[in-house]
Length: 412
Image (cartoon, rainbow, N blue to C red):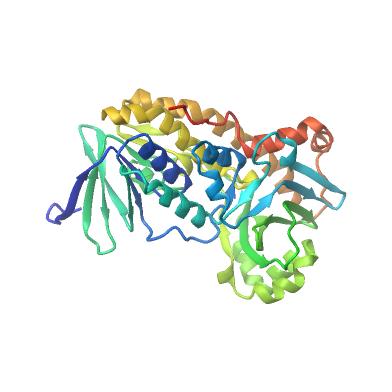
């Protein structure tokens, strides 16, 4: 930024959170609840982006319950996934049955993420310490003596503003601007697939509290109950989008209907343009170090997750919980050390590594094999054995519904 460009405002706060996704919003809520002045900067004017993750896992519902928010959250119309199944030409397997787990919330809540974020923003607004700025496009880090002491952003009128704080938290997603400004590059792996997300209507009475993964003839389809509609994820080999698009929207409808004939007629009416689809370029990555002086990364900004198991939102929120647990008191004192930031990474890095390794095995053994059209798909023998064990059917919903070593809200 040119030194001649004036600043419309310069403000001081206790903590800056960049990015109003689930991780950033939950962190800002928890810090404000603890009495920390927090400014949440979101680049968009609202939270309404299509095909963001719509899953609210049991661990998040338990967090909402601990905060006294679950009852109001559950009043918002939503869908349930109580069972996740894998259908192959050979048979149908129960991958995760949340009804087997002892919890007040034995399901994954399917709720449009925009509604979840709007809900949290309204609840956070009750705290005088919470400040939400929409349309704040962060473009600069403010640094002094080798530490980040704030950010500069442009508003919707293209004016510059500066916010200063002892800590800036980057929760701005897989394409993190803050990460790029800090000169950090995550270590990446290349999952073998991409996903095309779309929706089809659900007729009255077709309310199955389940989701499914269907593999047949080299085709791979994820089906999720989204309340009044079905959300479909058509999985295909990475790099195959241009070929898929060249075949036309009719071919995509045909591919999906071959796997799930029940949707054939609905697709003819509801899927007529590529604008109704959203491409997810699947990746998995992780920063080696999640912090610098005055700066912390959480959620996708620190570790991008594969969509396998839908755990990305869950892990971002648990990062936020752990950060709030560890940093609320230092922030109230106005001083956060590198040791404080390292403690957040130390607590969260191992669970992230474990689940990313699990995702990698599933991608290699099931997804990549399922996308091969030269041979009939059959679930690998170890998986066939495991799915027959009662313990496995309890392990899987626990693993994907709560995560590895889930973060718990510290008692006040």
